[in-house]
Image: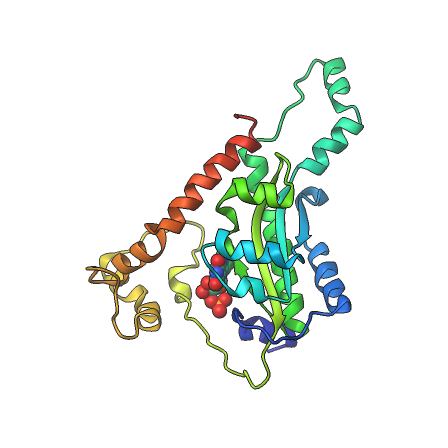
Amino acid sequence: MNETLSLLAGRCSLRSYADKPVTDEEKEQIINSAIRAPTAGNMMLYSILEVSDPEKKKRLVTTCDKQPFIAKAPLVLLFMADFQRWYDYYEYSEVDGLCRENGVEFVQPAESDLLLANCDALIAAQNAVIAAESLGIGSCYIGDIIENIEIHREMFALPAYVFPTIMVCFGHHKENDTRKVYSPRLDKKYVCFENSYRRFTDEEFSEMWSGHDQFVCRKKNYLKNSTNFGQHTYLRKTGAAFSDEMRRSVEVALKIWCGKT
Ligand SMILES: Cc1cc2nc3c(=O)[nH]c(=O)nc-3n(C[C@H](O)[C@H](O)[C@H](O)COP(=O)(O)O)c2cc1C
């Protein structure tokens, strides 16, 4: 394995950090690497916001589904889908006048633009995560940042065409904490296809998630009255209150982004 492949194979999420800052130089390297990420049409449809205010970090613990380690993370970066910069620039560039002259509509951002900008934001975030890892700095994504859109818009002064796609906590490993917990992944045969998608048989499902089942439910402590890993995961994730909040929040965000409010 080369260095990059071993770095990718050796990474896992870090949720407990040494009481040691991420230096300005390290931060610079992480952000420079994020900015070198591929970006749709080289438009850089994202922005990166550092949450350095301890009060804001504390608030995020609550607004992001009660995750206390956010407040303790030495570096917290918010990666946002951003079409606002372009639309402000289009205004500066008098694009509406040009459209009028040519008798064409000056279109406003739609759902597709948000999906594309989210791709940009996520790809930049993953570059940051890998750059940090190469510097010995661990990280953990926070998907719950898409909850509570009203609060997050106000906290970070986000205009209509900026959406908080993903947050990442960064920090050094604690001394003597050499423990790495590698969570399982599905076997490639369930994830990779050639030329066409394939759905799975009951027989395949009976085996597919057994590694995850053993990892997550070592003691078979399924939630409520669930009797298998599918039921347990539904209750823990897809059907859980935080997922409901995500659905509500993103519906609101989409309306704002698409000018439907
Ligand atoms: C989009 C996304 C959102 C995530 N959100 C959270 C989160 O809110 N809290 C958390 O502790 N981990 C979060 N994670 C980390 C995953 O739980 C983690 O990557 C997964 O369990 C696999 O473990 P590993 O990263 O250690 O290999 C998120 C990861 C991704 C990619």
